[in-house]
Length: 166
Image (tube, rainbow, N blue to C red):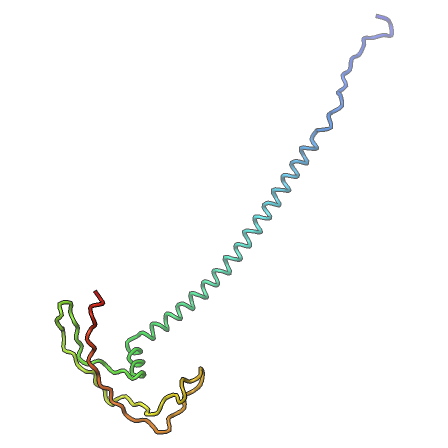
């Protein structure tokens, strides 16, 4: 070896790194996170819209249920025996006489009787609507001749015609 010349030094220099390093991976992760957050936001919005719709429908169901119960109460009141009797009397109906039932073998169970009611039903002798039927919403006028009493006599039922029921 020569003086002043020492050993040759060998150094390793790393080569240039490739351009594709961590940057594309970081961009990919950011894009995936952003897409995930936007997807969660859209899902949350859709769920909230469904929640509002459900709330609105529940309120509507409650209102309609209350209305149904009110109408059922009116039906129950109108179909009570005393209400039916009062309405039947307002229509001029009277309680039935003796009741009879016809059995399948042709025998009669019970004793039929005519309906009786005092005083008899009052009826006007004048035509209720002179000149035809009244117009909707028109009020009928009181008859000029006054009311007279009309006795309604029950009529025996007509004989059945030719066995059409069997």
